[in-house]
Length: 190
Image 1 (spheres, rainbow, N blue to C red):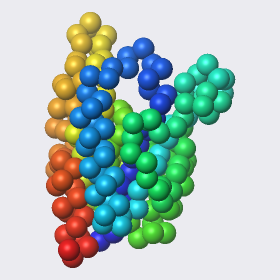
Image 2 (image 1 turned 180 degrees about the vertical axis):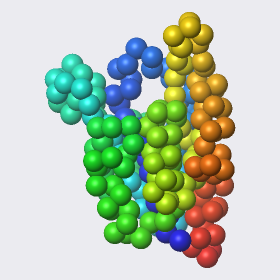
Image 3 (image 1 turned 60 degrees about the horizontal axis):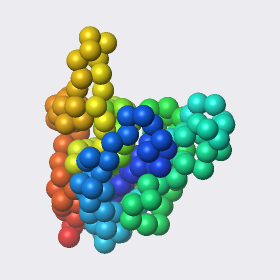
């Protein structure tokens, strides 16, 4: 069973949002480094997905014109098997990613990226509904606190826990980087 690593929206744009917090960044980067190094060692394709939306002006951090729709500076360098720019939450909408995955015989996806409960969760649900098996590597996702209309604030940890809860055994296997790589290794017969 062929596996691909999807690195979703791990991009500089987020540093320029008012909610940006680097509190969880070191652990997030370490988990993604383990995924990237493990994928490279196993010969798994690594797919870079970046997000662009809003007005195409240099002062919009998610506009291509800003120069910020690029991988986070601290992310280990890697050779992407493919790169897609998305304009919706799911990386499978309007990008050509689904076609690429089918053309390359990919049956399992390892999902990591920013934001846990938005683009990572949405892509995971969509991929599962389309028939892919998904390993959702929560430790390799990053998110930020959000405030509900009632005024209650959910921490990043609470949002991640909620995301893990709704995905586990319905849309994905929630796992660590090591567990996802072990499943990929077993699928390769190693």
